[in-house]
Each structure stands twice: as structure tokens, then as C-alpha cells.
Image (tube, rainbow, N blue to C red):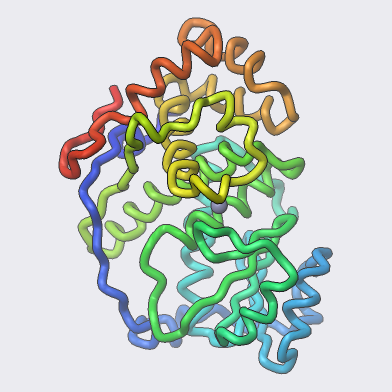
Length: 305
Ligand SMILES: [Zn+2]
């Protein structure tokens, strides 16, 4: 299977979407996520952070679930659009990675805080992802939403991709691959999600100034985004995933499987991409040009073919 064309062609047209008031969305009626008693949820979260979240102002929490996720929330009009976006992203990731879960398998838990002071209180328990402001821990997601605004970029999708990746690769995958896939898939999914709702939207992939590029051998060894190069790390990881997938999608899926089983990058790369990249240095050389392509021009097409 190939990635859709829009995955391969990173258009650099910036998108700007005005925030809509969540209350204005038609989600409180027929389509609202049904509330389920906590004791009647189909699964409980073994993650101790979940317990800590629900212990903060415990009487406020309501619960609900969809096919692949369980939600803990305060207001139905806040959780409903999140639940729709979560299932949407689940389908995109499963399709792109050609993975399936058996029916009734593990669901991911999503906790949605609304009050800033409670979110602040909860942050003491987990590591905030600098990029999205969410906390992802052992397959559960903790986020804060201001109920006055509809969420309007790919950050929620980014976090959902992490959750789904964790379902498929429970033993964790390298940071660059986790973050790169989260950006790569959510950017495209966000654009098609917006298009499905009548907005004009194209995926937006960031190029990197040549002098800022992190060498690939360094990038793939990082266990978390480096605090002095956060933007470069996310942008470069996204471009590397995009580049490897565009070069040979079946090889990319095999590489992903092998790296999820903690195989070394160098040997795995030359094993699955023998004709393209016999060593990390040959990848580095070809990737540098690709990663910096269109840098400094905001409206050119990043034609990857
Ligand atoms: Zn992330």
C-alpha cells in the first residue's frame, strides 16, 4: 500500500483556522458521547496515573467509551469532538501501518481536564510533552482543554497517534520514530479531517535549515527530544519518517517492526533498504538535501518524488 499523494507531497501552504466556540458545535444533541457509569466501563486503566487524575476533584468526572478509547471528562460538549477525532485517527494509523487489533482488545484511556489549576496540580505526576502540552504515559493520555474553544491544530491528533502506536508496539519505539510518525500522520490526517468539514487545508511539513540538522546517528540515538533543539527534533523526525516511507513503504514498515523490537538502527537500515541506503552515512547524505529542500521559501512545493 502506498501513502496517499498528499503524504508524499508536502505542501508548504500555511493553514489558519479560526477557533470555533465548542458550544456552537452540534455535538450536544443526537451525537453526544453517551455517559457510562464508571463501574460499567468495559475496561479499567491499570495505569496508576489514571487513579491520580480521577482523585482530583473526584465528583466532577464523567466517563464514556467508543470502539478503541475510554474517556474521562467533565463536559460532554468537550469530549464529544475529541472522541470523533480519536476514532478518526485510530483508523488512519491502523490503515497506514497495516495493523489490526482483535475485537475487544485493549482500549486507550484519555483523561480530559478543564480547570487550569487542576491540570497544574496533575502535572506533578507526569512528564509534559513540550510539543503538545499533553502527558502520555504507558498508553494513557492526559490533556487539558479550554472548553471555550474548539481545538484547532494537529496536537490532539499527534497525541492520539502516540496512543495508537503504543497499542501496536507495546514495547515502545525509538523517540524519533514515535514523534516523527505522530507528526507525519497527524499533519496529514488533520488536513483531511478539516477538508471533510469543508475547510481548505493541506498538510504542512517543515523544512530544516541545513546548518541546524541533527546528524542521523545522533537523532536516532536520542531517547527524548533534546530541550535545546525541540523544534528541529520534531521537524527533522517528521521529515525522516516521510523520507523513509516515501522511498519504500514496505521497507519502512519492516524497519518500524524491527526497531520496535529494539534492533540496532544501522544494521536494520541496510537490511531493509540495501539498494537505497547501505549505511547511515549514505542515508545522511541523501536525507540532508531532502530535509532542507524548500527551506526559506514558504509557498514552494516540497516535491519529494
Ligand atoms: Zn509527541
